[in-house]
Length: 277
Image (cartoon, rainbow, N blue to C red):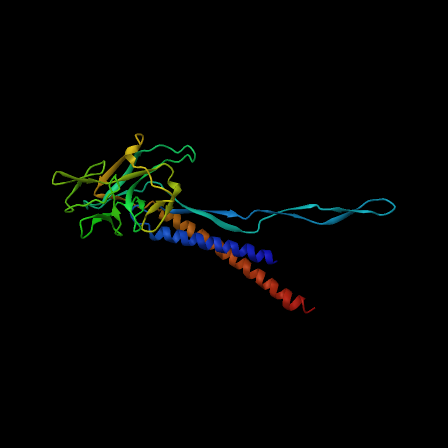
């Protein structure tokens, strides 16, 4: 009986975490460059149940031998094993702003270990000075003329330096080179992740590598990308699918809740009625 409490409770906790993840995806459906999270729900390791019994032996002394027949396997609950981003390319959205840029992966190699394609990212400087990466090309100029993200993080060039501009009247070509009034003014740094799932997701659409930094895309001859000025990459959240998954998670949570209530009533009867007899 008590095992049923834990099984139902684990299901409720798992669905609650799924609902929180899906709600966060839905709230970022219009965030440029946002990569939707996806989760996997796994069952706890199964327990193999056996019954301790004795088998009589037809002899004069009536010997009994211990016997443990198998009853079967039993699951004791579920849990959210991990939450990983979906790195599928989002749709392009035209903004008309000259500091907005969208990053498109034209040709990237496929990772032999995972079977998934690599991905390119903009190089960003975090608040701690460590390099971060993002697909959100909604850039702007701060008061000092530095090219930054909407949240105030500095955009870096291929060498890892900040980009300084005099005005927003700039032109950016497909390789990320910036020109002001026909003169070179810098270049947007682009890094390549052979396995994007090694990146750790942070807030403000930023990712980081646990150890080291991603290599610059210029070091890979097999990677082709294109930067589109005046556009941003939209979120890859499928709103219809997300709403369906949220309803499914809610119904599953509700079913576990009713099961928990039934167990509670059974325990109440066992303590107050059966125990009285």
